[in-house]
Amino acid sequence: AGTLYVVATPIGNLADLSVRAQQVLSSVDVIACEDTRHTQRLLQHLGLRKALLSVHDHNERDRIEQVASQLSQGRNMALVSDAGTPLISDPGYPLVQALREMGHKVVPIPGPSAIITALSAAGLPTDRFLFEGFMPHKASGRRERLAPLAQETATIVFYESKHRIIETLTLMEECFGPDRLACVARELTKAFETFYHGTLGNIRTQLLADADQQKGEFVVMVAGNPEPISGSEVDTEKLFKLLLAELP
Ligand code: SAM
Image 1 (cartoon, rainbow, N blue to C red):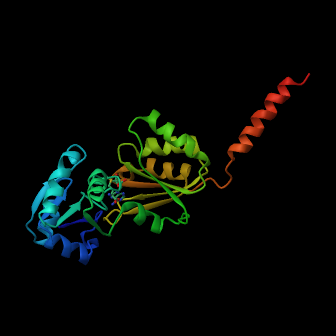
Image 2: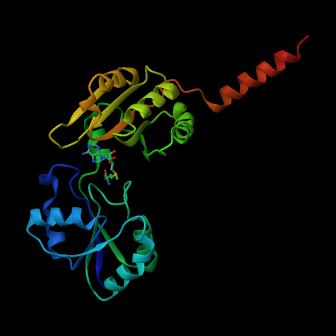
Image 3: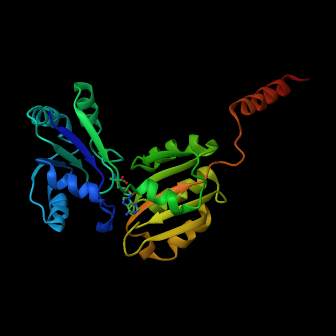
């Protein structure tokens, strides 16, 4: 039977494609990809011509049988997304899960991912981090996601688009306080790569000052709470107040 290779591709700079990724892409029979036009450009750059199969959020479940049958016939396949590592805020999870359950061989070909790239140069603690991916589009949904994270002690990492970056930084200031340390990585590995390091308030001010700094792709990293209030402390405080109210 064939193998499904889960291949990481560059997040900007094409030179970041690994030699092994290139070897696998040139050797497989079919490449399952998020957007055929996007992957076609990468293949053109590599001088490769391959059969492509689109696998995106809307058809992924229907594709499972197709991919499984190709593998059963002994064909090797690669799964790529538009940028970075598949399954990391990208399609592929239902496919990989189903193939594992069926007993197919799934092999990772590691490479770029915006989260690890951003953390590696942010200067925030990396011993423990929580990846939150994309937050909901609506501001109310984002506030609901952020509020319970205020006590988190690990570094928290978010993916964000240019459409919501300012609004998200504003909500983060509201939920974590303007003095919380953070780092925003913009356009990683590309011509305008920029890191903004400082307090949430300071970073928001820097981005607001120049509309050009609000363009591109962003990874937002927020340091954990250095002085979290534990659940039990909160409860004791509540209890104390309740008891106080009972006193004559
Ligand atoms: N699978 C990808 C990975 O491994 O990083 C992530 C795909 S997700 C659909 C796209 C998001 O990742 C962007 O909105 C941005 O938050 C982040 N991202 C991807 N490339 C980036 C880059 N070059 N610079 C900054 N952020 C990036």
